[in-house]
Amino acid sequence: MQVTVFSCRDFDEKDLFLSYGKELGLDLVLCKDAPAFENVDLVKGSRCVDILTTKIDRDLAKAFADRGVEYLITRTIGYDHIDVEACREYGIAVGNAPYGPNGVADYTVMLLLMSIRKVKRIIERTNIQDYTLAGNLGRELKDLTVGIIGTGRIGKTVIQNLSGFGCRILAYDLYQSEDVKEKAEYVSLEEIWKESDVISLHMPLTESSFHMINQETLLKMKPGVVLINTARGALIESEALIQAIEQKRVGAAGLDVVEDEFGLYYYDRKSDVLTNRELSILRSFPNVTVTHHMAFYTDNCVRTVVEDSLRSCKCFMEGKENPWEITT
Image (tube, rainbow, N blue to C red; front, side, top):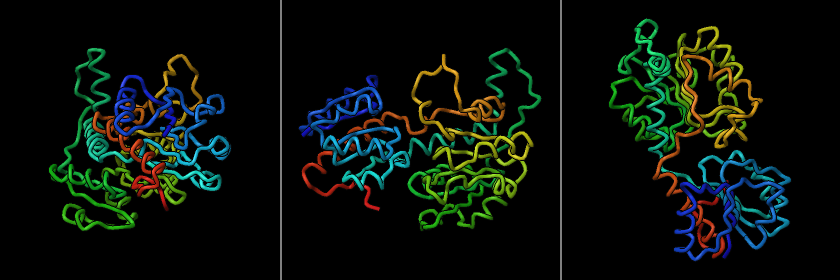
């Protein structure tokens, strides 16, 4: 049973793939590069392909199918980078390998605290031996109202983490959780916009959630609102956010994801001229912390997604129940 693995990192994934592959009786073709037409022939002989965040469009899906691929799994929670409809049209089932919620939830709270305490500004000043206080006045979390949009596993864990800080917590989700109601109050999106000092996003990217934070919704928010995004970049319209920061309607932002990050994140691009102007502008603001899609990146996460992605491939090839396959 052969599986082709793309975007396999030598420094943290390779040994895990080799270990779990041996344990599961799988023959692995490991490739450090992302899947592309130049290396697509590596999938020959593999019914299953294991990827990361590379965009899999209709043409690449067809190229996989033409070479015998029947199952595609991504080592991520989100799968908006995959044209699922095209894959299914060409006879390729799709799966994802969700990791535990704690890493992203911890990182979310870290970005939130960094934002309300102006840590980016403090660090930048310290680096040039500027130890002044002016402009660095922070706020205490206990005095703030935090709005959590999306109360799945990660959003629920963020709420659990925040509950110890004494802040008021509001929540929004189409599907309410009884566990969440013990620590947060479910309200409408309109109330989230109106009442929250901090808004943190934990929604999947769908047609309905695309640019859910835009010029219109930003105008409904409190002056000086803090925005945190560890979910998907396109939940926020970058240009609208930039304008709101420049107009001082947004007080700070902590962004682990941005629009149009494909082809940038996880690559060494320090000698390249980048075309994502919005990213450059956002990084330039003293009140915006931008990290490169790192919230997931913990030792537990890496182990989990490698093991589960391979177990999913084995289930598929053996015709067993496959809890990682996307059926909706």
